[in-house]
Length: 157
Ligand code: FES
Image 1 (cartoon, protein in one colour):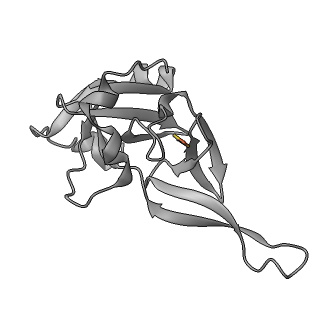
Image 2: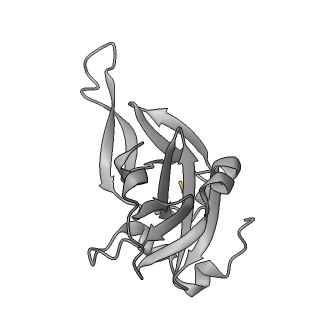
């Protein structure tokens, strides 16, 4: 029995119920308007739950339609609009770069643009999954798409 099973985390007012873990595992991903103010995507991938802003930091693409792939050993969601790669755990934008274009063969490496997508904390309590919004005051690029204008756009876009 894990320590979390022995001592489940206490519920707090900033933890917002998303759904039953079993249902999220079965669906693979769910979206939810959290606290009436933020559209969040919760993803289950290889035994882990992740939460991030639903709309891509680049141009507002809906990430719940994106594939999940590993790049440089890091699980990422690939935005269906322009294929940007975003790490599930940290919200970093990844890209490939050539170290020195004059040296052949070209050496291509994965690099990080830094945190571009706001991620949120996921907590499981007795089979229920909660999200605590990341309320860091530091601006993150995906914040731009958490407005009423984008919220009212169809999720099927
Ligand atoms: Fe996501 Fe462009 S909107 S890659």
